[in-house]
Every structure is written in structure tokens, then in C-alpha cells.
Length: 496
Image (tube, rainbow, N blue to C red; front, side):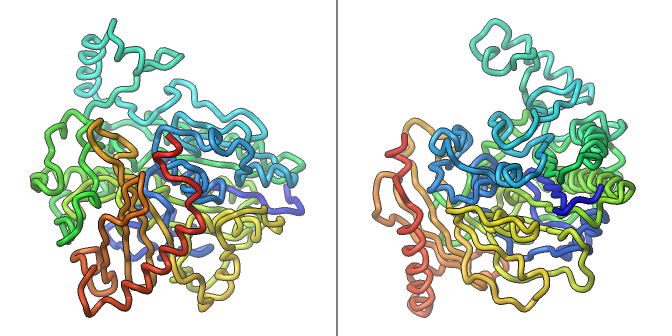
């Protein structure tokens, strides 16, 4: 049913980096996401404000930066410090939209009921947090053995939800010959299609959030998606060592990957590399997971077309952070570097565009809120940190903003008792990245990084302090200082 206002479908993909066909990656099979990009715009320089799930999603959905929210890790809901925050779906709901969601929109265990007109959809037969769902017999046997070890201990209480589902990680990959709906993302797509039919029949426009869990670890997807790729032909990361001269605090540990039993002893980036066979397995699993999600997106696009809603629906697809696949010698996210902060962002206006879909302007995730308001004809909510880039859709030559700002709180995710927290702030210009690190209880800079992204491709050599780059370093340091002065209400140590 056509309404005066366009519908909105917002698709979230967990840990999706811009390794897609529409971003020029010929080795990735993503025809459906590429089709979406051809109907709108894909943004080449799109950056999240912090490269880890919970604070990145909270920042984008509230239009506020992590320091404004005082949310830097996985442990805190943004409403603890911001009870009156108005999220994107809340704003749309206040302007006549019916808002609904399924899957991972906010962080797994931190939903936000205030954002939705109705309770979040539940997929029958899956745990509340379906991040780690296994169907392969080898992994299932390992899980049963692990459950037996934990029963009756305090650890059992922490790993079993109110419905009796265990949250445990087994292997980092599996590839059984099962249908798409054997895993959560396929099953939720079927339910989402049913829900879209219901929403399209309402007498008001809808805002529907669809949150996919893949390609986040574990890379558990049906075998047919693994079969799309020849593992022997998969190339390893081109640059596989930490940046030369970078401070140790800058690179993530391997704790995320070590959480899976088959990679529990993998080395840290400064200690060594994964065996090439293991690295190819993980890259293969990631690529297969991307193609699995692409297939789900295709099913949803096809259904919107059947409903005659495709040309009346704004569609956004966003990754909450990037992910290293052996880049810098590491795996995972949780740094201030290009591979972690740069994400895919694809937006199709209600009426599809034609022509070149690529946009090269710098955009930030906090810009999505005002942009969606502009595309939908809604007034901009007050107090947003970002700027609308709605004019980029019609004018590819529009200059856009000069900088994107991100940050990361080292030890703010998994904090050793004897470690001192450090916050790194980074500014990304057209050609450069500059980073400053601070202890969280001090305004004294303890480390600096400067990288020439244009010539290096990725951050390869820290140029901070070198005389020939003093002018550009001073310019970016000033931009970062101005940014921190605007957004730093209190230090992490003061919040805790």
C-alpha cells in the first residue's frame, strides 16, 4: 500500500567489511547486495565511530558519538547514561511510522523496547542470542561434553538463558549440507518476509530493522555457500604484519578468535601468524558467510518487489564495524585502523537512482540518522552529532566533510585486572590517518600515530614525529583536538 511517506528497511550485517562486488572486490560473490547498490549509492569512505558492536550500533542509532553516550564497550546499554535519547526508529515512530524489528539491531543482549511499536520478533527454535548456533555433529558433541563439565558450577548460571539455551562457542567454522533456515539468519529471513507482507498492508508507513548475525564468527553457514569458492585460489592478506613503529596498545589481541576451541592457541599479532591453511579456512568461511547473507538480502528485495513496495521503500545496508582477515597479522576488529573503522554503507532512496552508484565523499555512521530523515522528508531531530549527506545522492561531486573521527578504548572490552586503560582517538582525512592515545584518567598524550593511507594502502609505517610530515601531523592533531574538545564530557575512569 502506498503512503504519503516512504517506508524504511534498515539491514544490519555484523562484522561486514566492504569486501563486496560493488566495492570492486571481484573475488566475492554478492550479486544481491550489488543489485541494491545499483539502485542507490554505495559510500567508499564510510566510517564507524568505534569498531566494536555495542557502542558502534548505539552511536549510529542515537546519532551521538561514543563519548557523548559514555558507551565504549560491550558491557553497558546506552540508556543507562542517556535515558531520554531518541533513536532513529523512535524518531520515525513519533512521525507516524510503525516500527518493527527482527534480529541483531542493538547489541545481542541489549535490546531497546522503546524504539519499537511492537515487541521484537522472535524466531521459534532459536536461542535469544543466536550468535553461536551449531548443527555439525562434531561441534554438537564437543558442546555436550562442555556442558557436562560446567553443570552445577557458577559458569553454568552465566551461560544458560531464561529459556534454557546454553551460550557456548565450539569451533570457528562449520559447513553442513543444510538449508538456509537451519541457521538463524535464514530462518529470520523467512519470518521477515512474512512480516513485510503484514507491514505493507497497514495504513501507515513502516520502519523495519533486519539484523543479520553473519558474517560474525563463527563462520557457520550451509555448505552450498562454501562451495561458491575454491579455497586453494583464495589469497592471503596482502599486508600481514602490524604497522611498523606503532605502539603495542594500537593492535587488538586475538581473544575473540581464541574463544573458539580450534583456535584457542593462536598467536597474538606481535608473536606470529596463523598457519596458511588455517588462515585460508577462516577467509573461506568469512567469504561464504558474506554470500549467505547476500542470498538472504536477495530474498527480501525480491519480496519487496512482489509487494510493489520496492520503489516506495528507502533501503539502507550497514556494517557495524570492519574485520581483519589476517590484515596487519591479526583477526577481528577493535582497532582504530582502516580495516576496522571502514564499513560498507549502501542506501537506496525510495525511488531508485540510475547511473554511477559510487560516492567517494567521507561519511560517518552518525550521519545516517539525519540523512534518513532528509530522504524520508522528516524534520531532523535536535542534538545530532552528524550531518545529512542526502545531497550526495543527486550530486556525486558534492565535496562533503573533511574528516571522520573514530576511537577505541583498549581494555574496555576484555580488561585484565593489571592493565591500565588507554583511549585512542583517530581522525581520517582524504589521504591520511592520525591517532593519539591517552590513559583514560589523563589528558596527557602517551602515543601518536600518522599514516599515509594513499601511498601505503593500509597503515604500514608510523610516520609520527618525522620532520617531513610535521605540517600534516600538526593539521590533523588540531582537528582531533577540536573534536575531542567538543565531545569529551567525562573520562571513562570517571564514568566507572
